[in-house]
Image 1: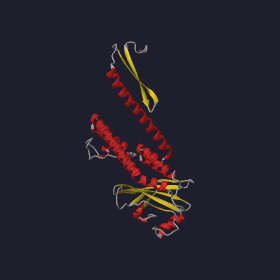
Image 2 (image 1 turned 90 degrees about the vertical axis):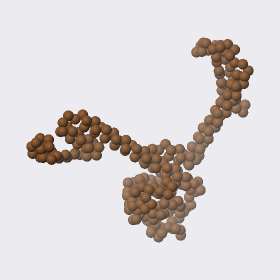
Image 3 (image 1 turned 45 degrees about the horizontal axis):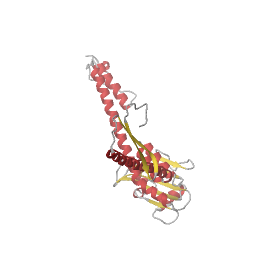
Image 4 (image 1 turned 60 degrees about the vertical axis):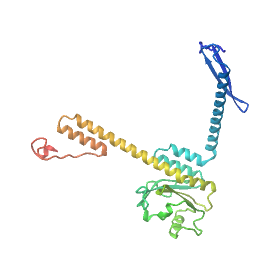
Length: 301
């Protein structure tokens, strides 16, 4: 065997090639502190193991190469991977905007319904807006009554595209007039929903008429489920964070109250804790006359 200074107690050794399709990927080297430790059965078993390792390594390499190829060539794959790692509403919105922007459009908006998941939303909250020339169609943060919106609610909840808003279609004259007024000639709507629960929509648009490519339409269809699931996950994580913060605030307030030695200290701790939890400029506490001092109400404030 090879005299390895790092393994001075080796008495026997077997080295087996890791081969796939005539290509040498590496070797499997097994050593023992016993002399003549490996018989023919051991070598056959180790060779079988080496063959399996070689196949596993080749599969991993191929999958890695395919992943790199998909990353470079498939917008759907890129969007899916990035949406999987997004954990906040802002991150999910950014991925959606960047993904839609790659489909050759000149702008898009993301709107969410309020209350969330209602089949009859009262408000439409525009959480993100992008336009190639930098001037958004509707500013982010805008809230509009659903009944007074620029599109019918049922249209916001369907997947559709219009290559030319000036041509006869299912759009109402009012909807056509709105798109004409804001300079939109072609538009696609991507509903956001979990099952039958509507969450909102993404609208992608161009200023020049023309059909959306089949690749773009496939991407939009994939976003219906993938973006919706990412939004739902981000909401659940945000709610979990808020609950954890609330529980931490309650524990902190309870500890401060438990350490208080008199009524004034208890009230001061409660007031300070509520002020921090509610981000209030101040908290006012008033007790009944003489509760603390046995004197006037003014002394007990």
